[in-house]
Image (cartoon, rainbow, N blue to C red; front, side, top):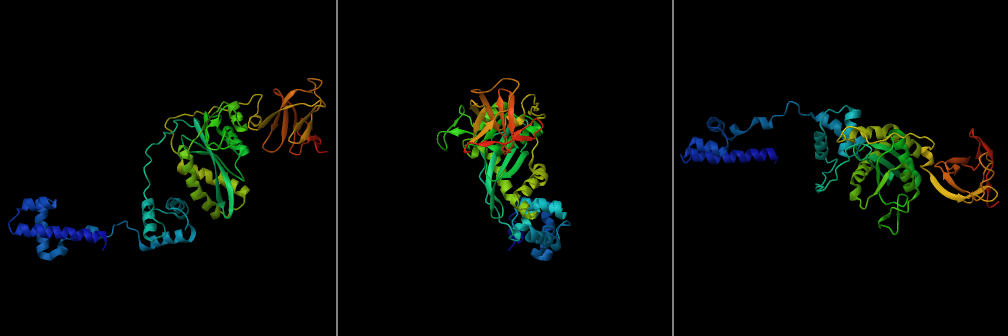
Length: 401
């Protein structure tokens, strides 16, 4: 028996009981109407219907008559067929977005979800416990940036790391890309993309991964004095780093990854993408813009905390890189990672023997050597010395040789 029929039956039984007491003069019409929760005139009208038609005269025809905007059987079946044939592993919310955008859907999300549940195509989720303590968002974009990585089977039978850099105030994803393994370079690239697009931000929130922080033991407090290469780069940029000490502390980014892991693999499969280069292009050009339009929120206050990046004598790539200190050998060579780099002659001094220099290693594998703010030489990925015009002019020597 449906819930509607059950309620109608209970209503008729209640009316029959009160009607008999009224007919027996145990209740007045006013008292009977009050017990039924209706007006006296309504009670008398119901009595006339009951006496002439019996129980059928008490049925509320509004409850059994189909609404004027009720969906037809064909409309419901079309929607269910689309879900089963193309989006069978999508969540209700993800499918609803696709149904509106690609299949001209007109119904509400609640209607679509209810029809899918009634057909047994999706299961009802268990009620989640309340989040009893929620950290308020930062009021302005650029005040706090989250970055995290997620290892997941983003395409069939292949696991990649997805690096996401997002804003706390708006949920906007500023940078997202796949790499084979999360590390220093991937983190620097995410920060570089944010600064180039929007400017310098105030603070940076991360987990305690070894490329972000040094810790004595796993799970221990971070050492804010012994910085990693990434920590040193952000200190040079004047950006505060904030460590998270539990997954709950990173709740905002954790929930973001939950949504990404649910939606992104299905979008990649729908686009027949299995290659990382194509996947990164799809992320940048299609998925992230659409994702931001869907999930971005309006900041609490108007304005921005971003500060434009205005390079003067220092390029951004010379900060977001690996920096190591070395001492120049007597023959004006520098040893770095089992290779010897010959310094060219300079008009600024006769030689650099015993001088303290800095080696910058960039994400593409190229090398530059600095003495203070002055760049002494630059080498390509193969170790060839570059001239001022960028052409290679000499070959690197290996220590083993």
